[in-house]
Length: 247
Length: 224
Image 1 (cartoon, rainbow over the protein chains, first blue to last red):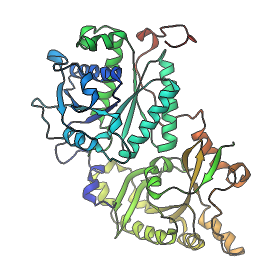
Image 2 (image 1 turned 180 degrees about the vertical axis):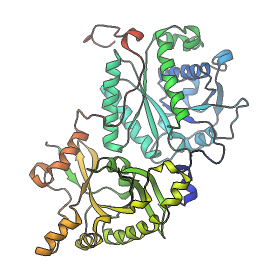
Image 3 (image 1 turned 45 degrees about the vertical axis):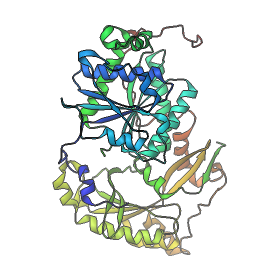
Image 4 (image 1 turned 30 degrees about the horizontal axis):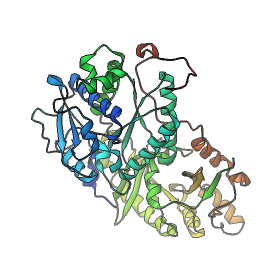
């Protein structure tokens, strides 16, 4: 569809003319992916620790909502938890966008998106900046690749990031990311964004069960260190504007 | 090389979605500046710039409409040339040099002989590239195959019959039987083989194995 200059003015201006909402980062999470949901929760708390002022939006209707430790998820350093009544991607996208419901000024809004809701038939600016979790397992890499294609179909300009976990070394994470990114580039013609790696540490899951984020309960742990590394990458990209097209 | 075969060009929207990567892979890469803007009574699919900063208007022709798309593209080039300085006022960092004029790049699955002749007449301001589509292990891969310089084609045409229509045919024989196309197809293979390498994506982490207590079990040991 042809667009007028006013529609694309953001390509040419250094700063938006109107105040935009906070950067929005979507986390597609399957209903049985409780470990990855724990990562999201811990990342949110780590981002709060880093003064990124995050909020976390979760659809009440999805199964993933039940996996979140509720209601207070981090004590004083908690990100604001926003519960959406959305039952599909479109309504979740509306809830994820301003007007911001936070009274303290959000720096970054995270949204848990049930991955079952994502299909190429449902366009969604909500997915403009998306972070996926993947392991080096070939079957899981295939599934992640398939999910990237669905996201790219729903939001063709999406900036898609990947964080590896379940790796035995940094080199393995690098190799798995390279494989996935190469397939994505060959198919879609654009790069994937790397967001490092996270440790599959028992502490992360135990902390989730105990409703205490690992970055607070075990701040010196290796798992917390990897979470801090990923959080810093997210903060850097949010500041630089490398967050996909803003709806 | 078995398994790679040419297939009919995909829908225009699919080509548009992959435009950024395809332009970057041209022998003389182009960098996207803006996509899908309204031009002179129509649409410009994209505006890119070459390494010198020359703006290039790009049109993806629907099947069988390449001749009309060429005429439209020339009109859009003229429209765009008058606006580049305004664009630079809005954003001086665009990297575009208005004094170099505006080039045009027309993309199509195949070109009518009249399109080739018209492009020849337009000279160096206009370039053509075929959109090659390939099936690789069930996945669709795209590549741009620049059509020979209109000037060179013109020299041949003046000594012989008019240039024939592009030989691209749906479901053409396997590519190794087409030596003339070996160069661009080799590039496609480099992009889509099983050991495919990411060209633009870069792994990022500040952590090292020793900071993460990795590896946690002997290499080669089965995963738990």
